[in-house]
Structures are given as C-alpha cells and as structure tokens.
Image (cartoon, rainbow, N blue to C red; front, side):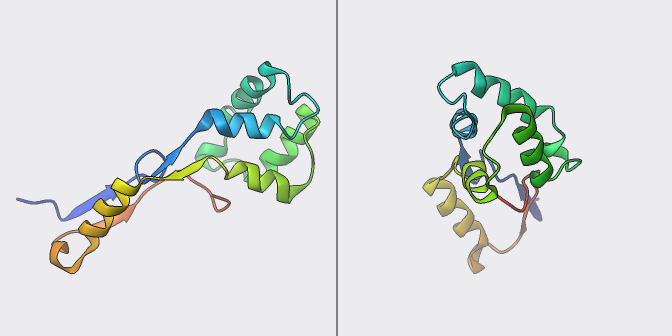
Length: 119
C-alpha cells in the first residue's frame, strides 16, 4: 500500500545548509573574527542555547551572543548572517514538485522542521 502522507525536514533535505559557514559568518560579527576558535565556540554556544527546540528565540540568542562574544548588536546584520548558510538543492526541488503535482497527489506532503521564523 503506498504511503498516504510524506513528511520532509527542511535543512539538509529540501535545502542544503552549511553550518561551518554559519559559524564563520557569526564569528565575523565579533571583534575576534580572525580567531579560528571563535567560530567553534560560537557553534557550541548556539547548539547549547535551546534555539533548536524553541526554548530560546532568535532574538534572545542574538542578545546572548552579543553579551558573550561582543558580537555586533545590529539585528539586520545578525539576521542576514543567521540565514546565510542555506543553499538550493535543485534535485530535491524537482522531487517535491513531482510529488506535489496533480498526477502524484495520492498522498499528502508536509514539512516538519525545527527551523525558525528568521530562516
């Protein structure tokens, strides 16, 4: 029996994401941008922040990173860096388009992800 519901994640499934690029760009907003450990330390701070499970908003994360790393407090620059690590995955675009077409509509498509409004 074919599935009636197909559920996809966003990052790494429908769109590519490069977390190393994210950490590097966030580190670039600090006065320590050239210090390689800064990106690694920021990565640890973000991963341990509660951002991935919704306990912390992106605005709260930004404020925390400003306090911890003397990060630039300009929200627009932060928001641009925060979302700059995504890339298209053309092959998946074609798969999703085909699955969503009227001919293939024997099932429903849903997105389930731990992403946030800024992304």
